[in-house]
Image (cartoon, rainbow, N blue to C red):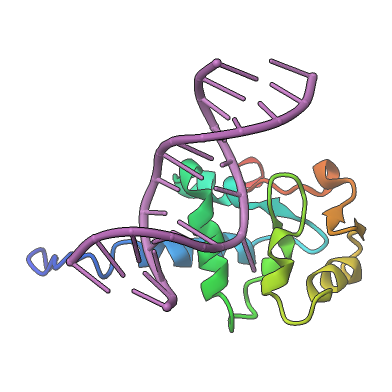
Length: 119
DNA sequence: AAATTGACCTCGG
DNA sequence: GCCGAGGCCAATT
């Protein structure tokens, strides 16, 4: 295969990581939630959970990525502020059957979906 | 170009 | 067992 054109300038390194986050987020089943760390860990960046959040920030415009199903480790809708409107995220979760009270997901452990555990 | 922030998590005292 | 600070990688200003 073309082995010579490995132009790995820092432009492409990392972008793949974002796409990977979208892939996992897209795999999140209906009525289920996960955390940034879980996805990061699945991608091999357990310590870079923050990047997952940044990836979601870039997801603005990608409706294929259910960012509303992604919350922090505590099950709190930390990023609901980044969504359109104020309770859009909560509304979406409730619309899927997820009970969200005070920006906190109820039965979070029960609804938690681990990519490593399922995949 | 450098410094700061950012949708977090993990470790230490 | 609870609280605080640091770390991570990248984007933004």
